[in-house]
Image 1 (cartoon, rainbow, N blue to C red):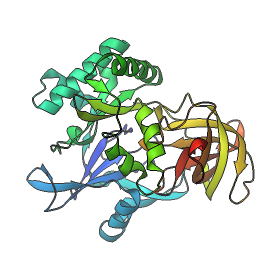
Image 2 (tube, rainbow, N blue to C red):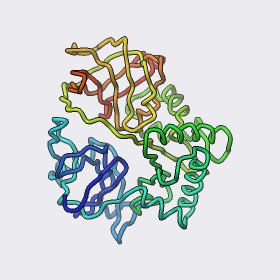
Image 3 (cartoon, rainbow, N blue to C red):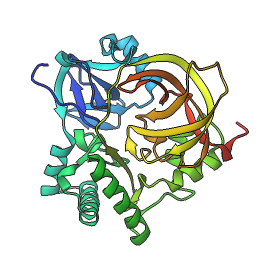
Image 4 (spheres, rainbow, N blue to C red):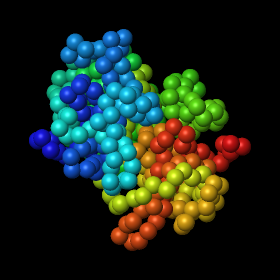
Length: 333
């Protein structure tokens, strides 16, 4: 492991070539870390680190193609998931960035406007929720020192109970204080196009995004909050793509990363599935808070067969470019 261990969602890695990856999840193979490429060196980039210019990249398909051409060693087969994923071999890691450590430094002496905004946001949420600031962390460009004028406040909260308490406090804060607010018709456009621009039906999807608590504006700056909890890691087997309609029977896990939805009354619209699909799951922020208990949804994603302690079950993983989860009030799709 080259002295590195304990990787979890929201951590960042810098490789020996100077690539920055965001760690995905908390379960990894022994000799590599599942992580997605986020920043690459580019002479025309708008961010600066150690005298090198960088640009941000986020589309999984785009970054996978970039790695195939330039750094194929970062695409590896993950046995647990039986899939080739973006991964960083531990021997290629030159630095690890930890969100809680960086936030602690910022809270001790916030220097910039963005750092002061972050500090006020965290300290207020901590006070309102009763959750220690030690359960918060900062991710994204503030974590790794690649801030520009358009940088967001990317905040992590660690622990299931802590996350639920902060979520409730954030909802109260948005209703009570003008300095933290939901998106409106105009300010939602950036996140709307970045998440769903290829999908269409943006007017209706804007209403879904505007009601979400985990993103919005803090002092005029976009904020994104991830509530991280421990995740089970049963073996799974990809079984191709699937499209279905279903009723969300339990959305209590929809606020977390990874987000989960329990479903029933499933109608499979594509090829038949060799069993009952009971769960939707995603590591992508676009799928958090996407539906509520009782909603009927239309879903496209990757079908997985999961072998858990209680037997075999089927779930749909949402995360590909063409994947979606739409309340059926948006149907005609």
